[in-house]
Amino acid sequence: MATHTPLRQMAAPPRDTITPATMRAWVLNNPDELELVTKPAPRPGNAEVLVRIDAVAVCATDLEVISQGPPALINGGPPFNQAFTPGHEYMGTVVGLGPNVDEYQVGDRVTVEIHAGCGRCKRCREGMYTACHNYGANYPGNDKGHRANGFTTNGGFAQYAVNHINTLVRVPDSMTDEEAALVVTAGTSMYGFTELGGLVAGESVVVIGPGPIGLLGAAIAKTLGANPVILTGTRPDRLAIGARLGADFIIDSTAEDPVEAVMRLTGKGADYVLDCAGTEESVNQAIRMTNRGGRICLAAFPHGPVKIDLAYAVQNNIYLYGIRGEGRSATHRALALMAAKRFDPTLIHTHTFGLDDLPEALRHARDRVDGAIKVVVKPQQ
Ligand SMILES: [Zn+2]
Ligand SMILES: [Zn+2]
Image (cartoon, rainbow, N blue to C red; front, side, top):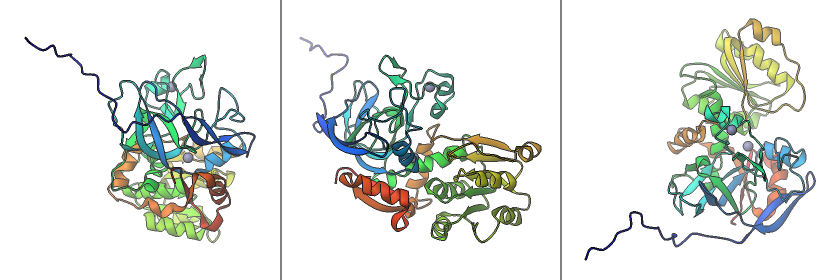
């Protein structure tokens, strides 16, 4: 008698799937008031996995969210007193799978990008999911599927988080947890230069501001074949790290006018300027140091209206474009360059703390204590 074979065998759950009922997580009460609590652990839904967070980097935008609120938006409003967990630059290990997920397995090491677009708006359909028209519109009764962990949904200052599979990037064993937590930062610079900018080898690039995005931006630009790569800023210690990451020239803008320096080094100005400072002074410097027909990527959030020399930009056919995160799976390409050891992103990782010490980690990042650049928290330690 023939044995009936089912067309599809129901897979037994892998032995090491973890279904924690609760977890330790930081939540944001009033502005600047974080509290470490025990709260229900999230459960992965369709197309989602549960990630055990192994490392989460502190970003300047986390500091903004915790103090001011925007760009975080929870239940359609400010992110305060809603048991919201911030933190968006994390990596970890897949420990649970939602229904029908076979793209990842339990045990996979992954790093994450921030945005999972709704998949149904005009921008998502174009692949620009970081500019999703339904950003923040994911509260009960109006859930269009958009997720931005650490901004519109719970993030990584916790033991676990749930991620859409489209936000995951596999991490090779050769890469440390701390290094993998920097992929989204590198991916942001990558997206600005390549997908949004169209940078090709041999073009000149200036990066203004040696913060994490700027420093990895200089590294990415060099790796992509930009020539020359010029980094400007006011902190000699950070500029020196930029030189080690690949900048051909570093300009201390307290010692030399950066616009004059760029003109001297490039002749007619730079093809691309990545502004990571976001001040009135830096945006105007960017306009004046870009050559005719060149492009300026605005990667920092100014704190108020900025007065710029728009006539100069118009008369010189200069393209200005903003960027808010990593887009078009640029994290995959940034990780590929990092995995190939094309530059050493660990040069910007300066401090590590445990989950209980998050306030101290934030203080190091905010006040740049002891030369802090990228501060990493390891929630499992
Ligand atoms: Zn960030
Ligand atoms: Zn969308």
